[in-house]
Image 1 (cartoon, rainbow, N blue to C red):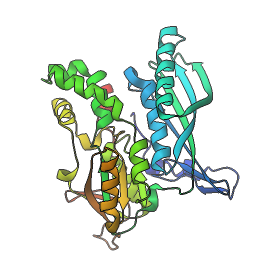
Image 2: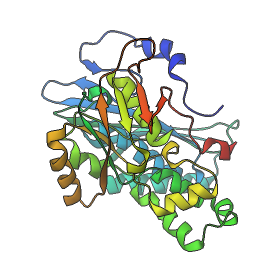
Image 3: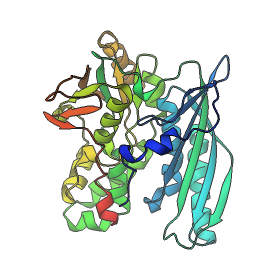
Length: 329
């Protein structure tokens, strides 16, 4: 089925790291979306992500998804490489993708420095794989959260999913009763999928950060817990969900906490720094909410092990399959 490879199936790939290099301070690991490479006075942050299913905005979303990983790791994304695989060399399709990539990267101040383009007839839609790079003097890992930290979420759940539903599945939403004004507003969420400003505002306060993508906020919380060897507790009612997201998701039976979540940033912040983090986000014009806490894992037969998300009392240990996949299938 479409979706991420389950964590237990990743063991061999995560162990396949090639030659040992002491400059690699953070390499492949479950939940870690970016690598950290020590350059001496700076750390190089590198992240790669593919995008294939959101056909209406594949170029824009591909840039944002890769840059978001670098930003969430404490760096400003500066460079991109772009691998484009298409079913055929249709000039109009390539022009649309190139325009979306160029405009989005320009808006972020990020340079496209290379890549590869190829036709793959077996594909039925374009597939873009972006690698983003940037430097920082403080790498912020997914696995850095410590017991007692509070969990903050910017903007809301399902921002990216809302934009996809209002574009790729507009007719289905309309048929299910979502009005035109709501769909127009929801389609505009494409402008909100970057977390570069969110990360810049909150990173000095955070011990860890992660941007929800596939599997949404719930998936990101499981990954943050797994990467940090911790347990996270979240109250669903405290997770912000925009009205447009609620309308589109309810119409098609989608859980907004389990759907593509680019546009939100999840950050773990020590309790004494929460007020400062929220004030910094507010000053940047970014909505945010405290949604939960971090605690130590438990031992014993009935205990909650590391890597557990407790959502409204339900223990979740495997990243959920994204809610939108069943619509494409």
